[in-house]
Image 1 (cartoon, rainbow, N blue to C red):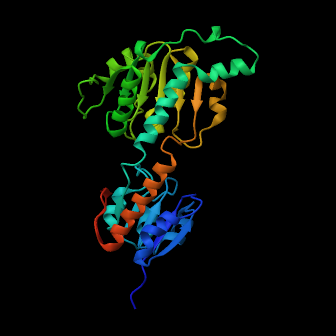
Image 2 (image 1 turned 180 degrees about the horizontal axis):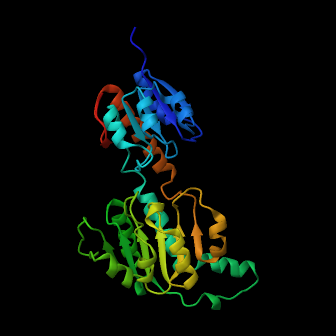
Image 3 (image 1 turned 60 degrees about the horizontal axis):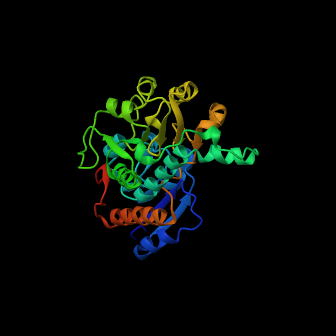
Amino acid sequence: MHKKQSVAIVGTRFSSYDIEHQVLDPLDVEIRLGGGNDTADLLRIAADATVVMAGAAPKFDADVIHGLRGKGIVRYGVGTDSIDLSAASQAGILVANVPDYGGEAVAIHTIAMILTSIRRLEAAGRAVWSGTWSFAGLRPLHEPRALAAGVIGYGRIGRLVARHLLDLGFMVMAADPVAAGDANVPLVKLEELLARADVITLHAPAREGAEPLLGEHQFGMMRAGATVVNTSRGSLIDTAALLRALESGRVGHASLDVYPSEPPALENLSAFRNSLTLTPHMAWYTEESERDLRTQTASAARDILRGDIPPSVVAGRWR
């Protein structure tokens, strides 16, 4: 008798899985849920699953990969640093991701962080709550037309952010080693961007195993009082160097949605709460972007179950 195909969904915390069922139920597959918190737990849930749909936390190292007997892993999201791609290729397991969801949500969150910083909204709120009915301590404030913004990483999301910045009146430049510029956003060397920009926002891919894109040397090149925003990857910034730059005033304000380890160690950041805006890795999220993410993840799993190649394959091959 032919064994029924199954899908293991691990490392997610959705309130229901109606979206996944809508996509996968027509194939008459078994769907099982689990945390996948460690190797034993992950293999207990997923070892014999035809396809694994995975959140960011479960770690698919070589031991886990070689314990899987299915066809593929699909990541809820873009990043695949939690998966040993080489081991997956050797084991004949296809690895797919979802690279094109939530771009507008990330762009809007980035713009919100930038505007919160340049208008000093958090400091203004603290002034009101403390009984200081004055904005004298917030000076100087500037309109976007008086400021230069630098976008590091000029891919899909970087371009969306640049478009919104231009609409607000910023002078915008970008740095990217492979992308092309356009009429309104000139491409410049990273060093020039750091020296000229009042606002710097990161939209580059992860640099696992490489030096952070912004470290001591790069912070030293920035204009005094610059604003730094990171809604991309925590590994792009040397956090200790950033805190030193905040302490010296080289960076006036930083807004972070992503961190080298999550959640971050707040005891290391608490002394800088007046010059930091922190959010819990939520830039990607709106109801609409979550629906898109889940639908596309389940659709990629459906493709693998049918023996088809999903739209975005990052590693692996069929067994």
